Every structure is written in C-alpha cells, then in structure tokens.
Image (cartoon, rainbow, N blue to C red; front, side):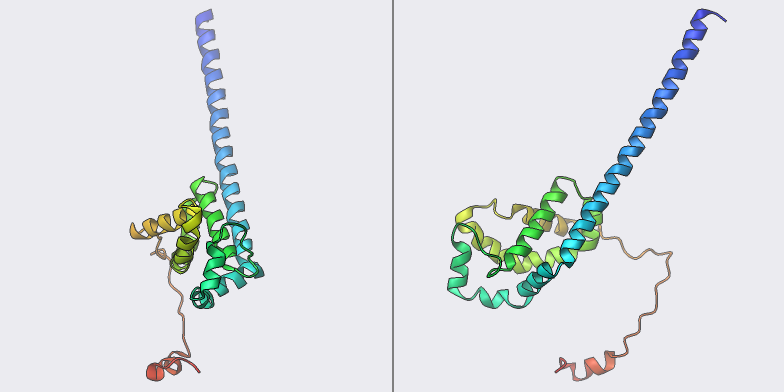
Length: 192
C-alpha cells in the first residue's frame, strides 16, 4: 500500500472516532439537559405542595377577592417597598408564578412539559391575581411580575393552539364511577 492510501485510511479512522465522540457528547448533553429540566420541575412541584404555598393559594381563591374590596388592604399593595407575605399571602403566589415564568422563559424548564401539568392552574391564578398585578404596577411599572404575565400568556397561547396532549388514543380509558352524582345533583342544590 502506498503512503497516500495509508494516510487516507488513517484520516478516515480519525474522522470516524471523532464523529462517534461528538455523537456521544451530544447524547450526554441531551440527557443532562433532560435531568436538569426534571430536577427543576420536581423542585417546583415540592414548592407547590408546601403548606405555606398551599395556604397562600387557598387565600387567593377564597379570601383575596373580599380583601381587595378594602381600601387600606389595597393601599398596602400600592405602596412601594416590602410587602409582608404574612398579611398578604397573595405575594407568595405571585412570587412563585413569577419564578416559574423566569425558569420557562430562560429555558431551564421545558415549556410543553410544564404547561401540560400546570396550564390550567396558571390560567386560573392569572385571572384571580391580574387585578393585584395591575395595582402593584401602578407605582412599580409594567416590569412588576412580568414573568408571571409571560407564563400566563404562553399558557393561553399553548392552550389556544391545541398543544395540550389528549389522552392517548391507543390507551384504554378506565371506568370512573361517581356514586354520589344523583344525590349531589338532585334539585341542583349545593351541598349544605
């Protein structure tokens, strides 16, 4: 064999080894990125299930609309400076959703996977907290809770384009019995 042929074979071998190493590195990066996404989602899930955030979410659903009718309560929110989450639990919820928006916007969390799990919750809480955000923005500007607004906007777009994955067609549905349906719907009256 001539020296040129040997050099060509050597170069081809080097190319194959380098290509295999590059492919392995790309696969490793994908796995690392997926693990990081999973860690971030699990951390948010832990935060979501914490007693403090659960109490704050319940406050926003049940108490905040009434409290927002109180001018002094609104004035505390409108004043620039620290807002104590002990007297304003809605701040815990706003901060949590803003953190989510930051993570999704900067691609630390996969948007589709996250919205598949939390889209309805985001939509509901943006509706409940939008007026509070508007009040906070009076003196603080439109940047206040912009990442919560971002994730709420992305959630609406995601749902509008039908990105929510339906139940897989080839997977049989389970029977779900509702033994209290007749009793609870009788006379369309809420339970007492």
